[in-house]
Image (cartoon, rainbow, N blue to C red; front, side, top):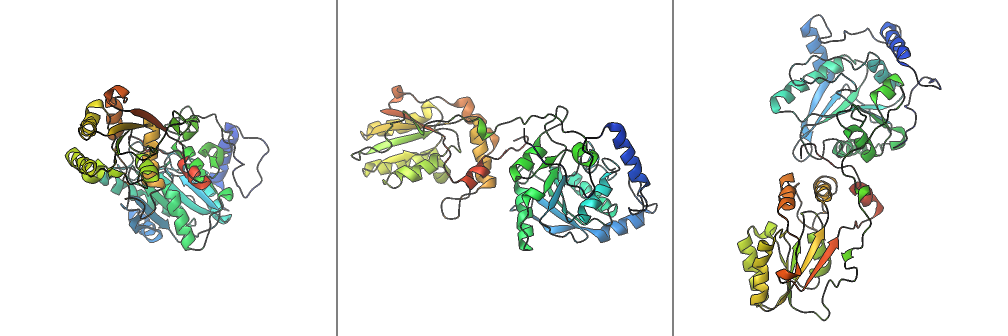
Length: 441
C-alpha cells in the first residue's frame, strides 16, 4: 500500500485525525464563516434567484476552449477566469469529490457540493499558490455530454474567486483515467508557459480509491501512474483517517521472471544460413514484429504480414514468390490454429525447405496491456514503424478462444517459445509499468 504525506494546508493541523462530530462542527463553521469567505451560495443550483443573472455570471467567468485536446478531440478543456500555471498542482476529481455523485448526470444541471467545506478548501488552495485543476471521466453520449457541460459554468459561478482549469475525458481512450493522457496534456500546457510541474508538491484527490465500497480504483491508479500523492475526499476535505484499499486488475509486477527463450539455448538464426520458412504465432502485441526487425530483417528474411498485405491469399502469394527465389520467409501473423499454419507448412513442403515455429508467450491481460501502452502511452517513434491504433478487445478474446498450441507433429522441425521480457531504459519501463485499463474494453 502506498504511503502519502499529509495533505497540504495553510492552517496548522491537529496531530490526530478527527472524528465525525468534529467534521460536522467544521462544516457548520464553514457555513457561518461569512467574514473570511465570499457570500454563501445556496447548496442546490441555480445559485441566484434570477436565472438570467446566474447565466450571465457563469458565461462571463467560464469558457470551454476549442478545439478540444487530443488527436480525436476527446479531451475537453475549459478554464474559469484566468487560471495560473504554478509548479504546485492541486488536481481534483469532480463527481464524488468536488460535487456529489449524480447517477443521472447529463440529465439536467442541478448539483451540490460534496461537502460544505469544499469551496473554502478550494479557495485556500488558490491562495496557497496551487494551480487548481479538475480531472474528470465523462464518457457520455453526445446529448448527455452537452447537458453535462452546462453544469461546469455554474460551478465556476459558485467559485467566483477561484481560477481553475478542467480536463474531461469524453471517450474510452488514452485520456480516460487511469490512463495518463490528461496529465500529459497538463504538463504540455504548463511547459508552454515555462512551468515545470513539481510532482512532489502536487497531489490528486479522488473517490475511486479501491476501498471496499468504492465503485472503482481508477483515481488512485491515476495518481500512481502520474507519480503524485493521492488522497480520498474524506482524507483531504475532512481530515479523516485513510482506509484500507485494494487495486484489482492486471499489473506488470505480477509477471514472473523468465528467460527470453524456451529452451534457453534456442538458436534464432541458423549457422550456416539455410533457407527456411519461419511461422510466428501468439497474441497481438507480444513483440512479434519487433522480434522480426531485430533478428530476421538484418539476415534478409522476407516479412509476410497480413496487416500490411490485407488478406491470407496475398500473404500466401508473397511467401511463395519469396521461396521460389530462394529467400527465407517469416510469416508474422497470429496463426492461432493448426489449420491456419498448415497453409504455410504446405508451402514449405512444396519448396523443400524446413519450417520452424516461434511461439510468443504471454497472457491475454499482458497482450491487452501492451496494446494500450503501444497505442496511447508510448507510440512508436516516427520512421520506425506505422503508428498503431488500439486493437479491439474482441481480437484478444478471439485468439484466446481459438488458440491451438503448435506441435512438432504439424511438420515443424522446431517449436521455440519466445517469452515476453521487457526491453528498454528505466523511463520507458516506468511508463510501461503503469496501470493501463479502459473500462468496458
